[in-house]
Amino acid sequence: MLKFNLKSILEEKDISISQLAKDTDISRPSISAMYNNTSKSVNIDFLDRIMKYLKISLSELVIEEEDIITVHFYKTKTNNLPSCTLEIIESDNNMVLENISLIPEKIYFEILNNLYEIAKMDKKAKKANDDILYLFSEVDSMFDHNEMQKFIDSSKALANFLKRIGSRNAYRLINRLLVEAFNFESTNKNEEEFIVIRTLNFEDIFLYTVDGQTVLPLLPETIRKKEFPSIKIINESLT
Image 1 (cartoon, one colour):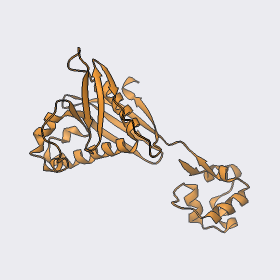
Image 2 (cartoon, rainbow, N blue to C red; image 1 turned 120 degrees about the vertical axis):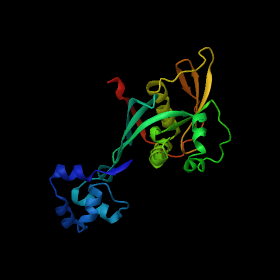
Image 3 (cartoon, one colour; image 1 turned 60 degrees about the vertical axis):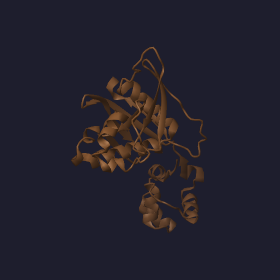
């Protein structure tokens, strides 16, 4: 991720935003936007004036910073289900998702008749499959019609986050949650099992094999069309 290094440079040279704006004849809001890395576009002439005034190169003014998202998770219990809380920390945004748990498709289908808000989202669903689990957030609100919007909003936020970080990062995070938060294991310890995990973005499907307490992702062979952030996952239940 590219960002302006103007703040560090001005602090090192002991130059204020007002002084830089005055001496380069660039508006203070434009300088402030670069200083705070909030500018959506930059005038090339402005860059040239700033570099000449500060006697720096473009590589010093604009630097590449790795985009790292830190995900802390905590083991919890929700309605006697193994669950967890995710605390997602990014450079410009933090988010907390609570009561995340796996819901078997059979249970999910049992409430569809009463929860039209969810039923209309997944018109492909036909009948329950024992091998399909749903990764939802705020699952305690799932069974209360008055709290339904809270469940939908939080579960959508979780699904959108998994989509935004890319399939490989999503697989890795879900794998950690299955093993360390949900203590997931096969029902038949003598056979390898195959499970499917879905989210409220119903087109997203995550495939795993489970052999005893060993959970392995079946990663799809996909070409990365864009760069995704790096993910640092920390199990706070172990600290």
